[in-house]
Image 1 (tube, helix red, strand yellow):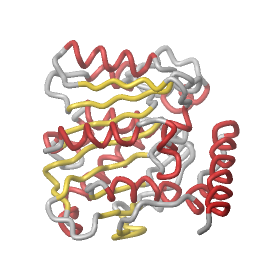
Image 2 (cartoon, helix red, strand yellow):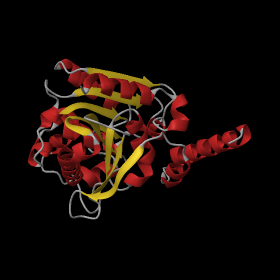
Image 3 (tube, one colour):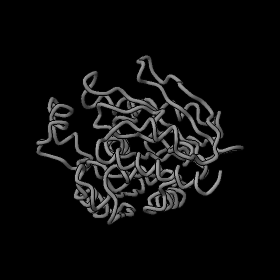
Length: 289
């Protein structure tokens, strides 16, 4: 591809990224057009439960053997999202040596809290049972998520009841990485939070900060200082609470990054905007052994 064509493509992707930021439009076009890291897609549309939303895709490094496993949970306010639109995340992580599982989960209004967490735990159980078929090591798992997906990953990492109920030993989770996640948002004032969590009998038990514990996995928390959708104070509060009980925490604040561009910074063409991907990968590799 010539320089002019390459530049045109990059400008086109930048325009798509801008539209995602301003309009929260679907990522399908970005997932289709974005250049991707070289990695094998090992399995698609695999069922981990009976519901049509309980499906997952697997991205594995070529020739993987006992590679660490990443469970990636996407965002979307717990009412939107498709795993196919994050194929570039799966390939990016697989290109760095992780067997990566991206799972759909049931959404509002089909479920409210904690249905999506139960689905995440079931998907993790599937990974424990099947990761070895793709060269993964099910004793070394990292939970990674963005936005609502970061909340899901945080709750699975910190509140051990969900993984335990699904038959997963929580000690298999060696690291957690949350990008622009809501972790401490009581009282419920936002309409999305009210509809999703408002019927919970124990509202404090919906908050990741409630379940901070000394033996929690090593944690990477990142936020953008321009994020006006999930405010950086969520990251600050969870990081502080974890540090206070002795958990290893790496807290990153990116001055020019907003909510959507936090996850887009994982993509191959947009990594130059902020070192989110490289710093997260380095953290996971250092702590998932």
